[in-house]
Image (cartoon, rainbow, N blue to C red):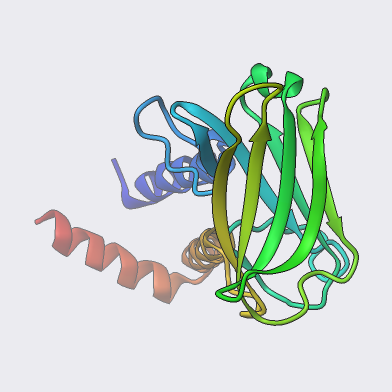
Length: 196
């Protein structure tokens, strides 16, 4: 098997991985879930959270770090359990450590299973914030869950973007390998040394 054939197969495998739906997904297999954008309301009952700043970053979603303060922000919550659709749930966002209320949505039942909190001006300043989600049952104790996030830290390069940059760098090197005889011979020599 020659080195060109090996490189082509490697390129196709990398391309397949990059466009695989499971690679870009938030979660993982049972027991190995690495989704940082969900939190537990009750033992084994989860809520998924995604934040958007659509005016500044129309194609991006965020979780624990929002790039800007004073920027229109959407906080979207998806119930992963049907039972919460029949329970009143209250949402509040506070600036920490002061505990100053930034946003409040009174307790209501959300039959669709998705709740969208629209903060027209985002959060007022850079810093740490806490999302309070309170289950308000018809009888019994209220249950409060929290999730923190930071705002105003600027836009970081996401892991998805780094993978995309690596893919294009690899693709560029592959095109150079195919089109430049001098580069191809050096790569072939290096591969031959590795094999031996």
